[in-house]
Length: 504
Image (tube, rainbow, N blue to C red; front, side, top):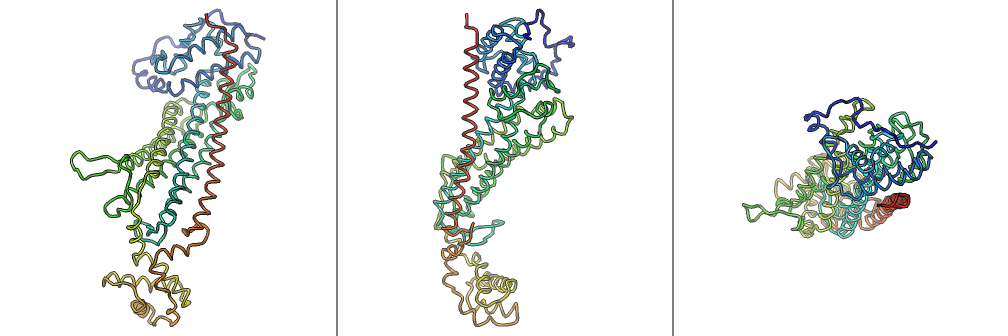
């Protein structure tokens, strides 16, 4: 059966007999129309695919399809900022419908066959969402590589790692950065999972229960470059859980950047003075000429906090009724802009790490602090004397406290005194085997960390090599998906142009 264009056209108002109240326009419609630039290209693609789907299903003939496609393609030549979007019409789709009717009259009504405006919007949103997820994932891959490269650069740069900003153990700054590279890499499968939701096609879903038009949903999905179709049309059209997954992945990514930025801001402060943020990422004070504020780090931290707030707001709307617009009213703009913000923060963090400089001599001095060797000294007591670790811990803790109180260094004599005070007995004679020279050389201590994941040079090199393989696989997947999608959308435009009635 071929459907002919209607002889009369019912406007978008239907049972609504008056225009929108200005308060509704200001509070609701203006919000919807603000999403138009992000959905602009996707709405065109959704319309082109729908017309071709109607043609392939035998619901319209080639003449109608050609005239519709020509009008749509001509509209597609108008940039979003120049398109006649009218805030009083609300949803961006309504302005497009009005423009299509202006160009070809009542024939424009054919485009609604078997489809709500919401279906077109959902398609446009998923197209925009998957594109931004891919952009963020590729940015994360770049950051992870940069962290890995700098970790390799500083794999021999010994420093005293800190916990609670207190001296902990001798390590390398490369090992410290590698920890952030590992965390960064874990965001890639999260983004990939979120992409899986975005890569499900709503095309051919109709309003809620499906459509009796018999549209080829699998065919439409292939045309649009989607991997599959939704298993349930109501779920595909109205669910919001995938939006939370996307925003959570973007927020977690930004939190990683923020945690590193906060560390670096502390390490760049006068109290530490072990890193320097590149001048291009700093900002001066207009009053204090000596100031060199690492402004980029504040931008990263503020951005992460903003994303946490947006995620919370979007999660709040998810608990509304299952098929209601309030789930979605803010979602298009909030979700898409959040992914864009996260991508900018990742790129900025990449620039910070890539251009970071360090004071390796000052780091080595901190690593040589006798507090940093305390754990190794306790280990040595266990290995040389057979003392249980808790007793060794208490002996060394007392020796450190005594050294700090007297301004001296820990020695065999002070360690023996601490042992007498803690245990009531002298150090066993076997303690003479303790290698004090190696304990006081943090580079030698680092070299003993040979276990998997440790800070020893070979262990770190093996970790970074395997991490690059992980990033290669994830990056390759996202690049392949992007290439496939672009190929499908390019083929859609080519077919639409071939079918379109020539311009007069």
